[in-house]
Length: 224
Image (cartoon, rainbow, N blue to C red; front, top):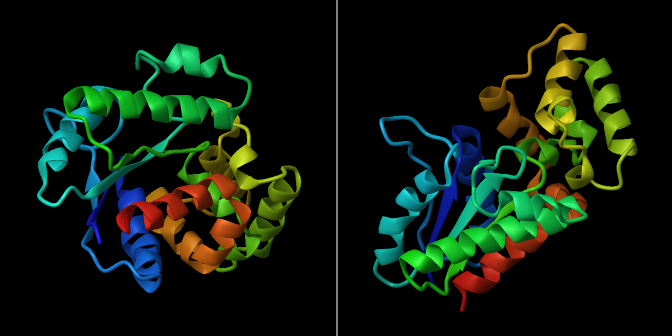
């Protein structure tokens, strides 16, 4: 069984991998090493503000012993606009098609460094916070009005991954506005993974089909 390395763009995603994804994968039979790696920025810090930062981060992992599976957990909403393929991908009809296109661009960029068959690119539509709309019950530790407002957003879309990505309507912006309306602050790092944990992986997978397909691909690839 292969080890698994997940290149993530921020500390929230890193914590999500540690607290939810890793236990889920181990419970389903993975026995190899699983590790999240933050995209590092030249000069210090982390974040996916430049595709070259991602490539610089992944390059040494491509030479790990045993050909581990390597994947990404990057937000579509914050994908670098200067990435060469972004304009072409953005012209496609649906967000899912656009994300698939960006994943292919990432795959091609990695293959240009070193042909690597165990790279599984993943771009989260539209951003990590979309997962937090999988079930309003995940916000149960907060004011009842927050649950009602989150539920209203959920009811307006066929799936959390379909929530509009316009800057003012992105999932994270919606959550911040909902919490603020009830005199609470949505703290991305502190609240996001707690909410995801309350929702639970089974519900996240049930409500977010693109996310589910990614997780299933990791299970398959690590056992190849």
